[in-house]
Length: 142
View 1: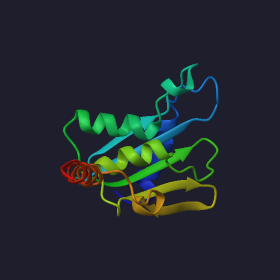
View 2: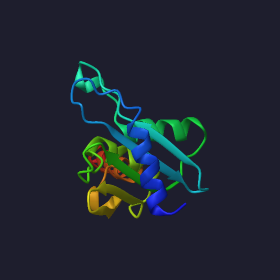
View 3: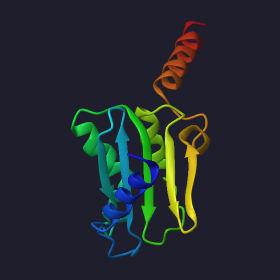
């Protein structure tokens, strides 16, 4: 599947968004390492902190189906404004994807492309947590 087809899948996904509060539909299409594509859309709740983002829904669906390696993510909004994943979604992506994950963002004049590592440098990771634990153990031994 080429980039434009993946972006089109993200556009189709936002048609299912539940956005009675913001009226800002977002869709995501996440391609796994084996080429399987999972889509998600945002699902709002009157308590915004309980809302689900399109990227989170796509990741959850992929992981639920046994996929934890990803190659590309396309994100599209009804406004076609080049929306990028928020910080929370970036951190969730970083749990499963390398810094070179391609992130395609739909915008009126084409597609903006980023690497996940450019969107979220110095992310929290398993090695970050292990390093912090080792520093605590070293300090406790003194």
